Length: 169
Image (cartoon, rainbow, N blue to C red; front, side, top):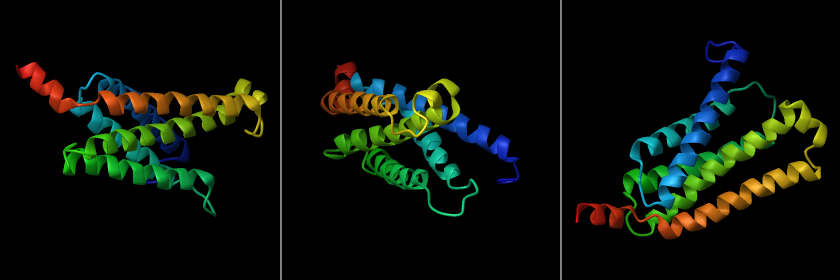
């Protein structure tokens, strides 16, 4: 039992949080590409992605695993994103810092999703049983490349103050 839930129920909760985090993170990223803040989606993304990382530490283990290191780095990125968004309100350099840290949080969630997919889905597991084979590396590289490209575009395009002023004019 974890937090009073069976391990299966807790695992399902963790997976649902992760999937909501990924979906809402994609929506937030798409919003950035059109200079929209999407405050509610951003709050949902940051909360569920943070909870995903935090709940990952509660699974039984006897040592630090690679997933724990990913979780630590993800939590740091998400903390920076929250600081940039809520404490510094995207002013000055905090705008692009928010974009980079939010996309990093999304990436780490996607990274783990790809790992889990290759561990849990029989077809993918057969393609890359040790996760060092080309299909796994290609999938992880594609996720990274797409998110890096979108992050660069979002840094250029995400200027919510300018979009807000244009809408009010």
